[in-house]
Length: 103
Image 1 (cartoon, rainbow, N blue to C red):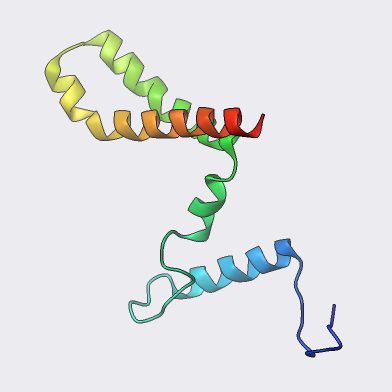
Image 2: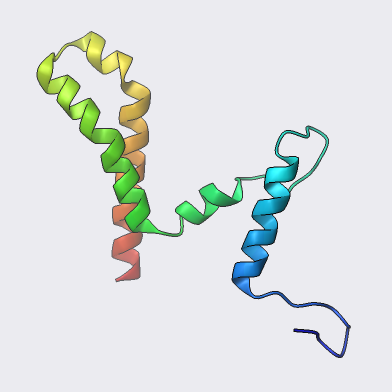
């Protein structure tokens, strides 16, 4: 849709996201190219908007760790999986907090 005042092309939100993803994909490996705000890639930013996806990914990370801890519980097992445990806890708690704030 063209705006008559400024002769600018306005994109709907989906087209804007597709355009940003295409730009990010083309220039992701270019160290001198500044993409967006530089804070987070667009796919990660959109995951944070959906608490259900955060919960699903958190549980997908947590299930194998729970099985490995039940199978052979030791301090070494915990230390070997501390990064995955942390990521799953952050995703699950973030998803729950966002669900509670929406509802």
